[in-house]
Image 1 (spheres, one colour):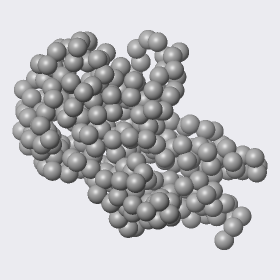
Image 2 (spheres, helix red, strand yellow; image 1 turned 90 degrees about the horizontal axis):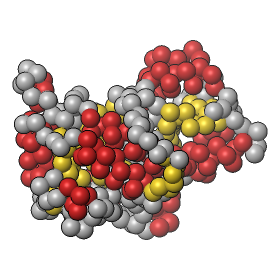
Image 3 (cartoon, one colour; image 1 turned 135 degrees about the vertical axis):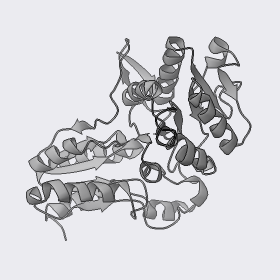
Length: 327
């Protein structure tokens, strides 16, 4: 096993897949000469050349469309957005072209493409640069949506995404690129659509994904000292969602809190709550609770930022509430 940063795990996954398949290309803003805005493509231009590692203009709609056309014609593009906040214009190509092309063409054109980049808040970036888009993209049939939380998961899932014949939305975080973790020396793939139980427990299930998994695990460690045993489920893949793993966990703990770094309305936590009440209602000993971003645009002020964001204290209170330890 080796210790690598999250950005290095991303770079390794892309590099290994480009060595394996000459049809895999990388394109996006600053991915080549600058080694990536977050250095997640370091050294790739030197190895693969400018025909396969392509710097684009600051025009997300344009280069996303070019990449969709390339995928329809036999290439397997990886498209890096400097942030998913900048990709709102490109969502037309992602949603109306990439996601729907297989169905609209009667199966004649698949779109094997990965759209990746940082998602969600990264501190004082204010309302237009702090949004989480996993709920938006998971709304649309035809897209697979992945949000890893560790370097190990990032590498294994990105390799699976690059090999997948469907369009994949792969969401990272600026605050995760420096995170370190163990990965094996040899090749490995993590299957898309499987959740992972990051911590076993018997009293309460907490479901989360992405960088806010750190909050879930920290809260679980604090509560363990108080004798509360929290099971932490990392979704990893938002769509398709591994409902079975969530249900099995709730059947064991009888309580559920969903932690999400996004707005509460029409959210991933809303979908999880629906699925659990639909398939495991009789196992619940208390109502499902959610801990989310406040239902407001993201603030710039640090005190307001803290107040609006899900955190360890809010999660601990929610866990104690479903256990009837607080009101």
